[in-house]
Length: 167
Length: 400
Image (cartoon, rainbow over all chains, first blue to last red; front, side):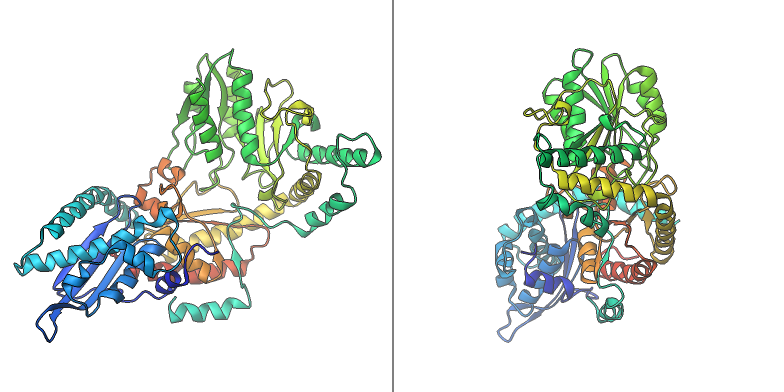
């Protein structure tokens, strides 16, 4: 049996919604302290006919492995056009289920990344627009920020290295 | 994959449906080796310990194989013990020396870029009351012989430094290290799994007391390997039983695999010089091409003191497992030191030891060439790799 399901390979080969949104309504970044992957998600928020907030457009960028790329691609296809309150309910297990064949245990952590970055993007949108932020989301934001700070410390060295070898 | 890449792949599909560039992981068995092995499965199937003619036939094949393998490294046949893998050879070298010489001392020295089977054996010996010094390496992965000299103390019984590194291809100064060990009267072991049959080895000139090598890295079958143990070296076996291999490795002898190992060794000995020159030319073409074509790319390991077939790059801004999979879709087989590709989720200890940060090891790629690598394969990689890296960098938030 191959390591990855057809669904993962499909999204990895042709990831959907790759790129940036200029002047996004909100954007978020999450990092994975376990393996060093980095994920950025950009959102354009709009309203449906009932006046509820929905995700009009979503794009992502990642420095990551096969599962990280495939998962984020899948997640972006799941949330486009959806209400923000529903999107916030998505858990990493929902993603894993949709990917078909079970992931190798040491790859589970890669699935958290996409969900975290999306939460951060929504948080950013709420903050910018001075909307009410639930206690749960606030808690999640604090957790994600903490891991990100640790990663940034690492990546400072990374950018210095890039500059050095470009000389 | 992008439309463009698919087009390139189709164009090259007939030429090179599969470009295998992972010879450092394992090699296909040479058809000449297969031919030499075949009689030893059903026809000459005897047990080397049997007294009848079937047994004698097998025993003769075993001893002839021993001679061929010994010849390659200028050893005596009786100094070669056949084992099942380089891992077994390395375990026997470390644990066998440690337990046989613990009255002299309980201190071992290894380098920090050894294969896991050396590092883990040393770690286990620590739990058995031994002390281990891990030597640092420089940014190319070179061990400084002076460090070896300074690390040796009265209790030291063994120094183990690999001949050539499996990930970055750096060739260690083992002749100098061997000389120091001889002066200090400490046993010197070297893991030659990657270099045996590829570059010259002379155990006398290099003052080597123990040396490990494996058949499947030199176009022989898996399941055969050897440990050279210099005459007079005090060592204790790991496997006790019927007393095979002069009592140092009991187990019914795997004659077909050992015959294959010997035939593979014979071919390597004959073709080594020419093959090394050929591979170096291809290697340097690929290295120079990639460094020129891919912005920010960096060669890991010593540029010159390097195995003829090893290439190891870092590409900042991308992740190795994604790179390997993309290359696989295009018919190229390679390997990486990225944390994402290992079940332990740790970046390669070798890349960290030469000073790379975890995220630099993240975007590493090892390409190892071999007997069937052609120039058109190299050209294909030079065409495809920059596009794959570019594509992954487009997905990455770290743009150049």
